[in-house]
Length: 183
Image (cartoon, rainbow, N blue to C red; front, side):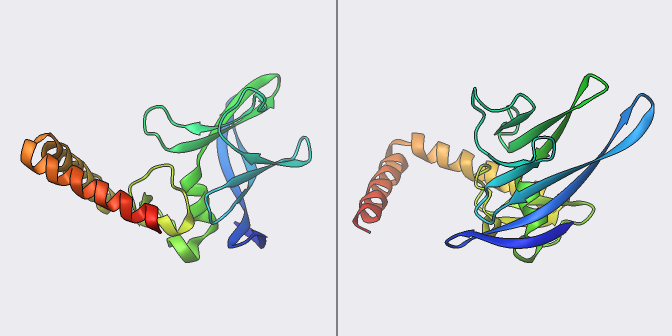
């Protein structure tokens, strides 16, 4: 649920969203609400109601609070946020994917995240969470894209190992790199 939109810096817009999650505690379902402030450049801020301050979520470091972690998932390599809440002297963890938060905040850029839809990274880079790199597509189409990317990577690896094709690929890569250095 969007509240408002703020301009943070040049070409970076921040929007406020509230995300609700339900967790069963002592046999009773309880609803928890979290306030995030994603930007269209893929940065995420979290409003800590207990300490009444806003934190910019960066990569996990030793000095970050114990209840708040921002790091790539070890299995999928998608950046996620873990927020801990202390209830009745017991800690409960809630997990949020950064690309989903950005897509929820910017439906005009990414598309509306409906039931059965997933957030896809257009360029295939899982930690590039800019709003213009995300799109909401049906789950079956996202699976098809993943298969196509696997086939492309396998073909590139095979061509790279081939003595003739690999030499052409390496020469083209050096040429492209030199062209990018001139710009």
